[in-house]
Length: 127
Image (cartoon, rainbow, N blue to C red; front, side):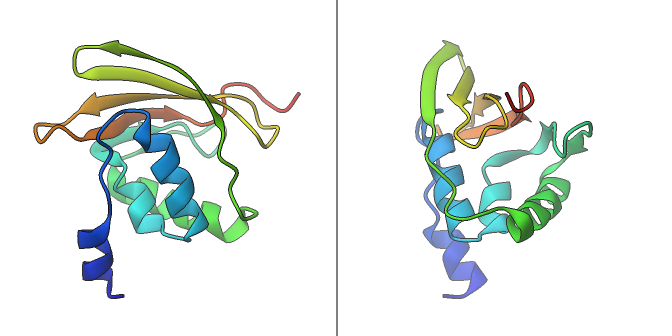
């Protein structure tokens, strides 16, 4: 499959809860570009630990590095209840890898899909 065909075939998040599932599916496929597409163009990612990564292109680069070193398969994680306020949603999952819980803010797009605008993948360190 070409990169163009892959991009056209990617599913968008129709609910904020879809974002976590799509993240795991794309990470397991080794798809850094697909991971970056889950973020708004001006999104903020608090990763790597102690850093802030801003913008989809920078997030894509971080995802590429993460995928080089991350064990696979990525586990699906328990989703905690989503909190919504209009076109904003606070999502979170209980980390399955011992790095702590994860929290994200997503925003509904004009087409009805959802993208992450803020992502903090490690809320607390390993226990």
